[in-house]
Image 1 (cartoon, one colour):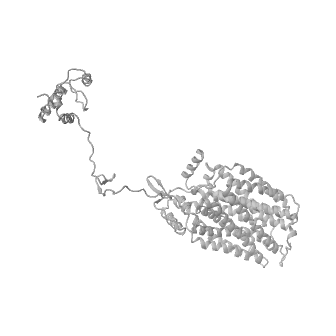
Image 2: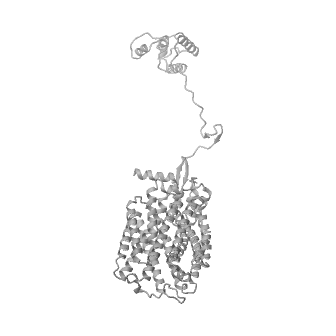
Image 3: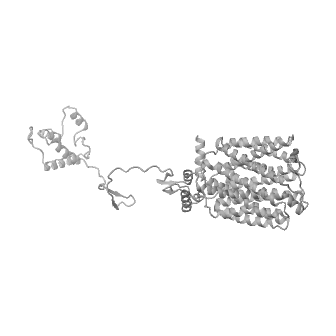
Length: 606
């Protein structure tokens, strides 16, 4: 082979093949495998000799190296030759065939190809949707977000109005016992114990109805429980108006108490689930305002009909009218979407959400509604972690508050009738009617209207305080101020101060009641909210039964005995509120136990 010059002879393909065969024979004889690396030493040459060659030190080299260091090394084709040798010694890695540009292949069907045109321009990301979040690579939205984004609109006005009518009916039925007691005592010649049993039996069955209906509302829905209770309420109210005897009347009032207790607890839970977090306090304030209007309605009816013969029967029939209106309006309501989503009813929940968005003039969110199929809450879960401490405190507050609120209405009437601290000086006290019964006068019915209206400032103050300083500090203020007014009632000075103390105590009791009804539904998750609030309200009504019974029974001996009971109850409430830790102002309602555990972990981390 010639040497030097640009016209040096280059090896042909045949020579390259023979060179490769010779190289393979040498490797076979030395039992070595050719290295695939480009810079590896040929067979028969040690790595040290190769290193010396690269560093410029003369050393014996192989035949291949001598060949390429000859004239072919100066040829323009040297690079191509070396590339050919490299390809002979090196096996390229196998690569899977790539699809042509513009071809999309599904992972689940690798042999099915769908031709899609190449994009003309890079796609723009869609604007962020406030309803959506990504769950398992899928865009979904929750009921909580929809309720918050749609805000307070016509749908919420409808909900609050219908639930307000239910609160109206509840107040009318509760005040009914206070209004007609004197007439029933005269007509049926009742003893003090029999007279005290009438309001007590109403509140006792009120408690049972609230406990049972709350559990049923979590299992079957808020709407069907309110409908069934509404029908039974109207029937029992009408039946009690035609009661021929005391015991038949007592049974009818027990059924009435059962139904009104179940309905009212469900109405509070339902309305709390349908309004945004920032409006829940005012929602409860509106319901309590309807409650006050129902109390005034009962007193106004009594002002006109109780002087008639058998006037208490007309009173009961007219009291049943709001119950019938409530039952009619309930047929136009929808089930709570929160209840539907935690029971896997996605289609029904979406229909309710579409109606909410339509009536509130909001955009219906796109995507999939997040649902979870969970069981309803059990009674035992109320007293287990993480609810143990809070449930005990809420239960004590419900007992104390119901004792005070419902007991004060009985106490004020008896204080006026017995001329406690000269309260009789402001009213004409003629108690004997044309049939020889000792009943309330017109002036006293007007005073009862004023007492009912005294609850309104308390509801407003409780709502404002809950939204400004928080639930906990409003609790503390209302309880301690109410305790101060109750103690002052024991110090009899004059009629004016006594009336001021009475109204101050009523305002504090009503503020206490307002913030308690705001706090309790917020404390529990949706899957057990009906059960928990029903149990708390039911146990609280046992406090109402005790308050009305003790007030009616002890007032026949001395008014101060009842006031002592009020002071003891206030002391228990003052001690219990010191252990309250959780503040729920501004929180979104928790739906499932997973959300609840997440919330607890976040609170511990913060």
